[in-house]
Length: 106
Image 1: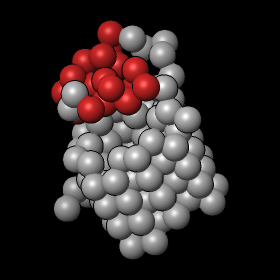
Image 2: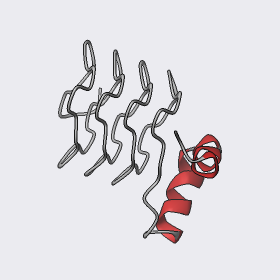
Image 3: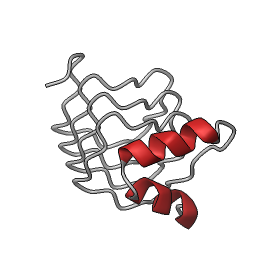
Image 4: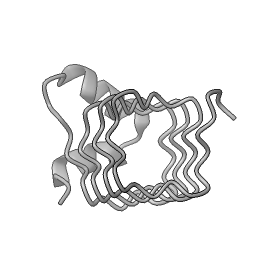
């Protein structure tokens, strides 16, 4: 289950989230099982975040940093991941049907 305070930070918007991440580099955000369907998260820093079983269907994650994020069993149906950094991301059993995984932002 997602940490409510982490989810509250994310709901403030990408700029506020990225500032919070920059000020708290040792925190590994727990957004597991979070409902983030169709959220606009373009450019968000979710490196090393726990997103297991999160619903990110239809979310815009273009240009997002998902470096070493735990996305196992996450729902990424139709998500826009164009230009996202997925290096080291754990995607076991993630649902990526119709997700945009292109290298460049679309």
